[in-house]
Image (cartoon, rainbow, N blue to C red; front, side, top):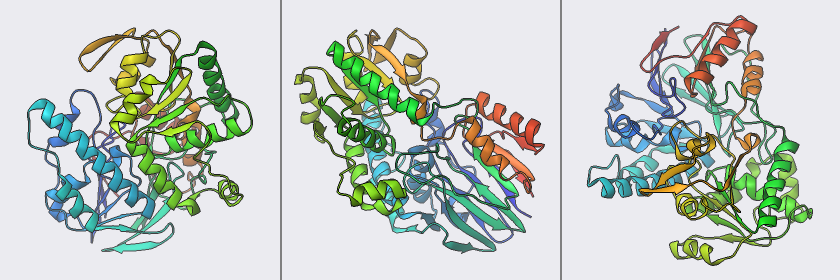
Length: 450
């Protein structure tokens, strides 16, 4: 008999953390950070509800901080098993967690609290036990057999397939929004009995590929006409690289003018170098473009601003211009400095291309607030606000449903996780109504045996 307990990602998007106990092993899938404006600091500091020393292995679906953000804490508190992921996820994980330490240090200085969630020493110990495995490679932990499957979300992202106690269990992690410009689609997996599926967009539909590209083109053209600044809060993994690829195509095809484009995120710049190292993970079409000599992440007018001085110098460049900067939900990072400067400007625009968590500055702007607080100051939102849902790296409600439908013949139970309650409950109800499969959105700490 196996037991599955939900210690994160339950009725919320972030904090993914699932404990699977079989007859011969105790395994975790993901160990992410909770991300929200008010209560998440306390939740991240809370002790784990299980003994980290008792865990045999941790399987990481991908390197976004809401899936890896507490891994060094797990190690700090005694975990000495093995961490498994694909090689790109391992490399991205090191980058993301090092960046996270920088954020934690800034927060500690601001709050006058020297007690960090984890330190660079904890990260170094973490990387010593983190092993890269290939898609399709089978791992054994106790009586369980584990295989990584392509998830199509970001480079190296995986679904975790676990066969234990006569059941095939599949954790989707985050499923990709097909088709993706750079990546292959999620892998087809058959014979699944227990499905744990994300639901970030469980009640929403994205635009199609052509529509999202047209919206991006029009946003740039409109800002050029006004001579303003286009701000794009962008996630360092996948979203920035995808936009670089799109900009490259639009400029080469003569569909947008050549204006200064700034990638103002050291993390994004470093992550892009990792992308270049794993070009064999791209889809066939992208690999063909690269073989034909096109640098898909570079074009005329592109500027990578690593240093703080280079970032500040962007202000000296007159519009029109484009600034892609982290963080994607505006919960920190250099985007806040640019937002403070350009949000009051009626000639400028802020363009959201990714999920904005409830309560985040980005979400408040999208929801129509005319003033937001940035670095303690009230900032007027006079700039035009637009969003493009089609650039999400997450599958939408139809993609999630179709993925579940493809498993329906063997499914015994579906757990809908990693979504706000409205999204996870909607998707679970849809699965019950249209597929006749037992589906639910579990609460934190809820356990199921099978």
